[in-house]
Amino acid sequence: MSVSETVPATQVAAPTTNAEPTSGDIEMDGGEEFLAAACKQIEFYFADANLPYDRFMWTLHTANAEHWVPIKTVSSFKRMKDYSAKGPEFILRALKTSTDLEVDEKEENVRRRTEVQKPKDQFERSVYAKGFGKEEPGLQKELEEFFEKYGKVNAVRMRRVDGKKEFKGSVFVEFADMAAVDAFLNADPKPSWNDEELLIIEDYCDMKIKEKGLTGKAADLRRDTISSRKGFNAFKEMENPSKQNSSGRSKEKPEVFLEFMGTKIRVYDDDEEEAGYVKTEDVPFFKGATLKFTGCGGDANFTEMKAPLRERFARVPYIQFSKGDDFGLVGFDKTLKEDEIEYVKENVKTVNSHEVAWTIPDEEEEKKFQIDRANFAAKSALSRSQMRKSSSSRGGRGGRGGGRGGGRGSRGGRGGARGGGRNGGGDREKAKDAPKSLSVEIPGGEKRKRAIEPDGGPDVGTRGAAVPTIALTKKAKTDES
Image 1: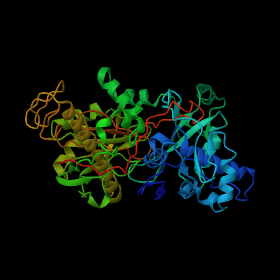
Image 2: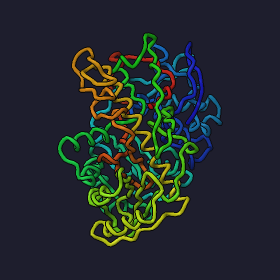
Image 3: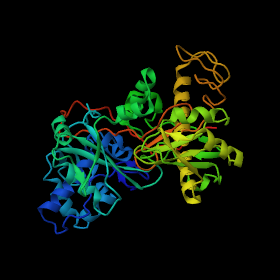
Image 4: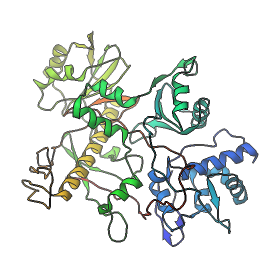
């Protein structure tokens, strides 16, 4: 949600606040249930699951030494609309029922009763579940109530298509303890939604690694990538003081550009939920640059598919496939000629030991696919830019763009970092998360997925053992040439 407010002596601009609970279907009669729902919503904003990962809330939290946040500001958030309609006295009454939050003497500000704690064992307490269909009004609340039958839930995060708000039909559930996780995984009968059994994966990370066939260091790297949260992270900011200038504010980042199918596109990094994205109108459309395969039987081996394609195409095609589906898409870096289409049909006759049919997708499907490609490539470009910046700050031997640095560092190459190429890795595209728990093949070898977000609760820690405070402005837009 986007709100813009002020805190004592601090101007805060255009924030994006993560949203969890919703008042969608709660009776709006100001009764005890509605009061409890209002309290729960505000508690979420201040919880360990959200506060240190929400740039705007963290800015409010660190605006003063005592961590007081104006109640008026919190009440203005989009998810608070129904509750705020009851008036400030109702909000105040809801806050006074909280055991996690406290109100100041003037009844104008609110804060946590305990200090922020870095979540522990969050990944182990998270479960992936798929099969919730399309989003309907009030679905967030229904999902929370569904999972709360198995134990205390810190957060239910509805997974959405990158760059859009479309619900993927799957969620990450962060339980408060392992007992709740076990209760959910061992439930008899198995959990179902609208009489359809859910696809449940306890170890989402291992599933993706196995699906890709990664081992050794590659598997370790993928595990770290999946289990770490993207976007703003107060703990990482505090561990890297070099990211801030003398005033405590984040340093301006260079602009990043993506070379996509021969076109230079700006990569934006000003959305807390999307770590790198492109604007739809900036993405060029190349009709006939995509092929669709059908009949794979619910699985696909990217390595086997790519092998014959490497013999004909200079750039390895981008493969997008959702495990369990009977079809997938293969994207090329140009409009295909008739003989190239025939080559694919003749040399990739089977996928997953099933004979497949190759067709050209309709224009709408192909446009959406190319936008998905561009968005994930944007994430990759932003990530490479950040890695090169980190490498150059450590110094090391380099070629062009390198030179000897101060202390140990990685070998440079023409981009000042390992990987070579003028841009430290070239303009290779990386595939984007697409709808339906997508698996996406990236030239160069790895899948990319949205990382699981951290969790926790505000009922731990002792006031006095404070997390160092920082004041941050809205994330600067970045990019790369």
